[in-house]
Image (cartoon, rainbow over all chains, first blue to last red; front, side, top):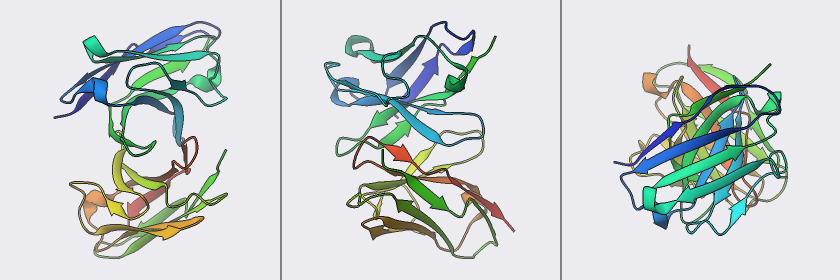
Length: 119
Length: 106
């Protein structure tokens, strides 16, 4: 059974940093692109970052480019999201998601971890 | 960015009824369209990909259609477990999502 378990969320002040982790199991992690998708409270979904199987290629929307960094450790079947210079508008539930091999859509999602950016 | 406009924002339907949700892309997305279901307090689940392909394990009462810029999700014979918010997502370019359609029972 595919499982994605996020951790590392919490309350952080504007301008500070936070690092999220996602532990994957039930599939060969190194064979899949992975991603982070967020959802602000009572709002829709926003793609945040994608990383290739080896970690050599990463992709971000303009809203987080230069502030967020996605990375992975295939030996540990783990995905990470380093978030710097956090803003109030980054407040959201962050989901770790597995990208399907034929397009940038997501067939498995974690349960999500809440990040609140507030002073 | 490709904008995805979903309608309606919410709807109320009776058990056994047929429901349609629409999604309009700001440009041609060549059927690179997925639908997700998100139940309250849960993470999204993939229902449909490539506009009309049913994801493994999804009940056959769900179906997708469309092309170009216009797409729709159809739920036949609505069940109580279908109460959820539904999102469309395009993946022809950097992925973007619709704002969601909240489906409730009448």
